[in-house]
Image 1 (cartoon, rainbow, N blue to C red):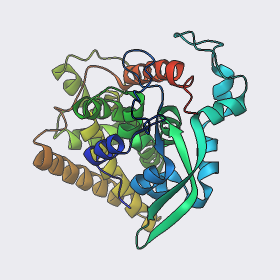
Image 2: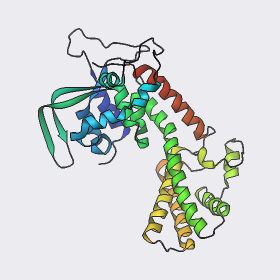
Image 3: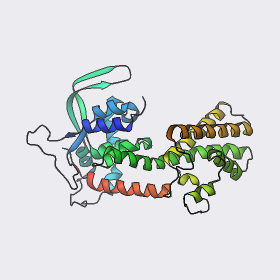
Image 4: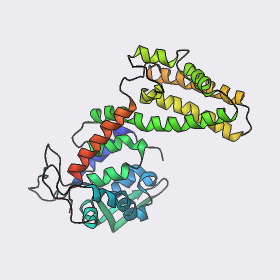
Length: 316
C-alpha cells in the first residue's frame, strides 16, 4: 500500500480527531497552554485504515504495537514536574495508561482486498503523544510526525517544515548508499576522491562541489560534504540514482567497475533531468546554507519541548 499523501493525511487526521468529553453537549476541550488541547485522541482503527499494517502493525497485535512505542526509558527521563507544573505519572504503567486506553467500539477495517466489520470489538484510544511515538519509528513519515508534534500548525506550515526536516532522513539514506558504492569502488581499487568527484560533477552538470558551495555562500570546510547542504528534492533524486545502480550491481556481483560507474553516471543524469522536468529546479539550485546537522538540532529541540508538554497528558 503506497504511503498516503500529506494532504490526505492532514485532512483525515483532522476529521478523525476526538476529545474525551466530546459526547457532552456542554463540552469544551481542556486547554494546557498556547491552545494545546489536553484531551484529544485518535482511534487505532482509524489510524490503521489510513496507514495500514505497514506502519501500524498487524491489527490483531494493536496493543503490543502501541505499548512498544512508549518505552520505560521515556518515563525515566521525564522530570518530576513539567514547565506547566504538571507532575509526571507515578510509574511507567500509569504513563502507558494515560496515553493508551482500551475501549469497546464498532468499526470497519479496510485491507487491500477486503473490508472487515467489527461490532463491539476492542479498539484503542491513543493520545497525541502516543500517536507521535508510533510514527517516530518511521523516518519517512516526517509529515505525520510533525502533525502530532505541532498541534496548531496549518497544512501549509506542516508541509514546509516536513520538506525541511526530511533532509535529515534523506541524508542518512544517501550516506548509506554512498558507503555501498564507495565499498564497491574501493574493492576495485578505485581512488575514492576521484570516484566521488566525478559523480558529483555528473549530478551538478560539470560543476564541482566547491563551486556549488561558493554559489550559495557556504563556507568551505575540510571533509564537509555537499550532501549536508542539499535540499530534499536533490537528495531524493541522487538517492534514487544510487539505489538503481546498486540494485543493478546486486544482480550481477561480478560486474566490472567500469560498467558500474557507467550505470551510476547514467542514473545520476537521468535523475537530474527528471528532477528538472518535474520541479523546474536544478540540483545545484536546491542547496541551503543551513547544514543538516543544524536541522537535526532544531528537530531535537522541538521534540523535547513537545515531550515536556504532552508526555504529561492523560486521556483517561
